[in-house]
Length: 447
Image (cartoon, rainbow, N blue to C red):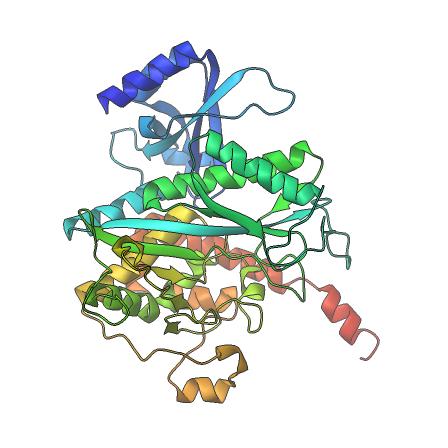
């Protein structure tokens, strides 16, 4: 840590950095920051920077407002120069603590750190590799009844020439690579103007930080070119929505704990128990992995999104998919959790996913039968007879499942758990008071 501290201070001096942005998120995953000049950086690293936490959603109450942002030197990066700005700017992610130095319970990064520590106590390291899907639109504003305007009409793996959306995606990937953020691949997705950037796997805390960085850069590069990028799960009706399918695995030292050479599919008992934990607690964690009213417009049959609690080896209609282990590549053994959407708070989402999987290992959960059929073609009766239950269909249902979850309460802690529920209940209540274009079109002329 001392070496990293000295590296940061030296880099700031040698690169002529003019401002350092201290990054953190609120409970919902909204990025927050304040900037300091280089002269304050050494003190910030050593002692932290005090700020008013009562102004941040889900943080402190007025009577206990002050908290401390403590920069994590390992996360220091020079930000790419955007148009209109000549000053060199860097950013560093912060852990939030109380004035007495104890970790602040409302800090999502702390929630993930605490869960990762639980995994380490059992000998595990948790790795993640998400597939971030998003849309480009001509504007961020949608007039009543008129959907946002996509920039292209392409579909899966579309290869286009002189196309703005493809150029924006390419520029984003190159910028990420310049920042030292490795991208596995990028592509056009199924829906018009929908794109995907897949990040190379790393430890879950680094990946959560990376997701926050990628989402901001995607939007900034789009804005530079007069268009808008959105990670909204389902911005267009009738086409596929955006997910953040997350590939995850546990390692013991340098060995993949999900791999077993003696198993037909290369899947270990640990992996099977981890999957069983994800399935058993799926409904309870869905409010966190899919936290918006709009999230549930995506989790419906027919649009390559899961809508039921199931697993399979290579079935993309299942909630948990087990990709084929590549020959001679035991480190590639992993499971893919397909419900998560790209508008989640990645710190909280990774925390509850890991907690659910660990519970499966700790309690030796039995893995149910594989769902090897196309679930989209099965009726509710057929799914029920096969013992396959649905995921929550609305934010309200997801909150009800979360509210009774001892697992989610223990993972998030009282502070985040209670604030999250209050905030999301208010969102659902506000939504139920709205009169939508669907209702007006369908009912006004007929009733």
